Length: 312
Image (cartoon, rainbow, N blue to C red; front, side, top):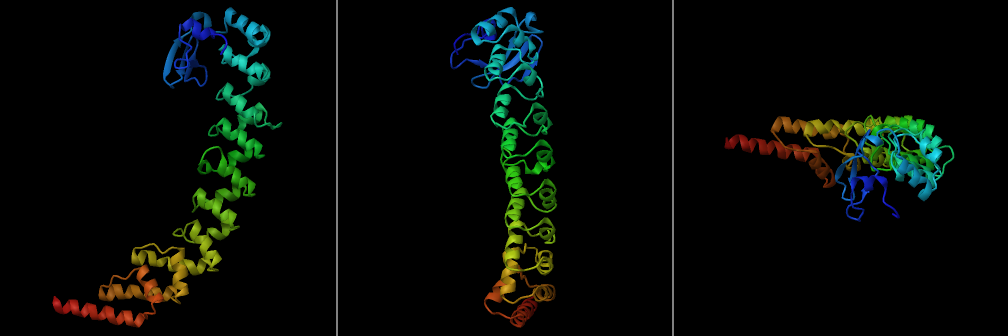
């Protein structure tokens, strides 16, 4: 930094690396006062004086013109929220004219302008930038623009897709041609990560949503690859309540591979009720894998029940 800013000069503050104040981002700004942050991100209240309540001082205007090449009439055309020399100097040096800078919403600062401009997208006008939901930061808007995503499209995606930062999930969905309407439909049962995986596998919301809520995205993908329909898979989920344990996609595939239908698996619940057995879904899979028939299990459950009865 070649010269002291007027702000620092008036405040009598050090411009050393450890004490340098920066004008962005500011926390509060009001006529004659501003809360800024130092290099350690600590808030510092600065009183600019009554003469700075409305606009730049004569000294500031002179500094801008002589040291930064900003003509007086140009500096004065910038909105009053750009109250500091370095704000206006940055805008001017980066060819952001007052007429353009003033059009941006007040939620954006000078650094945001530069970030957004770096998208190098012609259609990203201040009007388009302002149209993006407030939930999106400048970096996200820049990335959306580079991906060809306009405000109306980005805003239509459910806010639950705002994960991971920088708009990455929405950009991925857009690149995979998953419109907001399609992507949002999955959220009835699935989380954003599941949605991405389902889209990648080409499983539509209509198909995925047929599977009961107990199955997550990975379960649905595995079941589809195993050619197990939602109607068939959903029959096994009744076991979740009966056994008090989650039957997932892998379990259903194993049960099927062991030749155990949902109806047959449900027979084991009768053993629990009749003989006080404690058979769960994992046990049923193990019985099938080891070739233990229902009849054998029933005989053993009955024997154990009678032995307990005698002991009592």
